[in-house]
Image 1 (cartoon, helix red, strand yellow):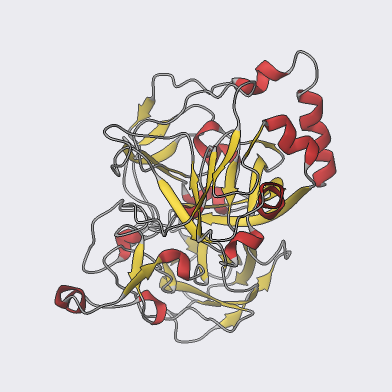
Image 2: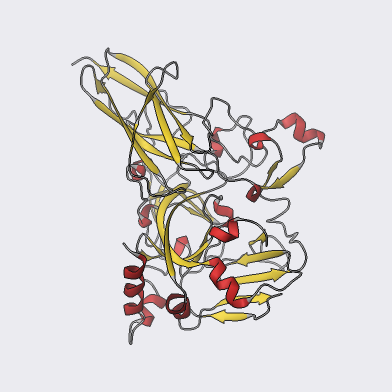
Length: 425
């Protein structure tokens, strides 16, 4: 949908008598969770599983998702929802760092506050964001820094995500730079700090109380960031950041502040826990190192925001849950993306990576979006096969067989595989 059409829809909602409807979105108040233990079956010999292993749970505004933890909330998107390039809002993954998440937001009193070392500190209402700034729409992948962490060997602490801590959406909002220009960044500002409405317990200066992320004022990521108020043409689900969240194309989700409510101009580098030591990676090629090197204390570390997301691709179908038939065509399909350039090529192997064929690419929705692919394969014989997929982006980055390792469990992008069984007719 065109940004102006989305904007008109929101303006209509903001008309007389409509504001309370947005202030308390349907299903925004947490109700009792329903939990159903379901069998986790991802195919013969599949190890590791495509998704993490956990119960399916229902939260407000969400389909049943795979729960890693409930305090803080961590919910993974099941594999089947990646059959489409744009992930449904109700199936979009959820990752919080602190246990107390907002259940409702009153838009009549909510403000986005720009404070600190700005020339003109200001407060913006939700209506002002919509009415006073030019809307933009971008198609962007949001991926948790620890997506696929369960693959790393040796294992590392943290949420043991499968491949479903990611999602792709069309995000509509206003450019961060437009808002910053209105406030004016004063000379001497070194970083911008972002904070939402989720919080924890304890003293405000403790990591368990506040989740704070900061970016250098000269970082290019600020120039492409968007303050989004629509997700796939609708108001954001509460668990994905209602009423607005920061969208940072090409970067991991740790910088995508949910329920964005504070932007602070800092005159000193931010040293809070969530900047250091959390979310740091080795300053090495691909963020790769070894447990031995880390133990030696000689590995230089840097914020994960110093790099863009690596190129990745995934097999969504077939998933190994049912056999294929010899001599009958099967469609191998999935998605690919990169934070470092457009997806330029996807290749599929049906013999465990010994040979490769180019897949057919789907529509190009933008540099930072999922790109779908398909490849029709007719199994020549009955037996077991190992499918594999690899992607290459426009900057020349290609997935390899190497499995990265670092103590945070970040940046995984090894070639993905899927076992399938083929039967005779």
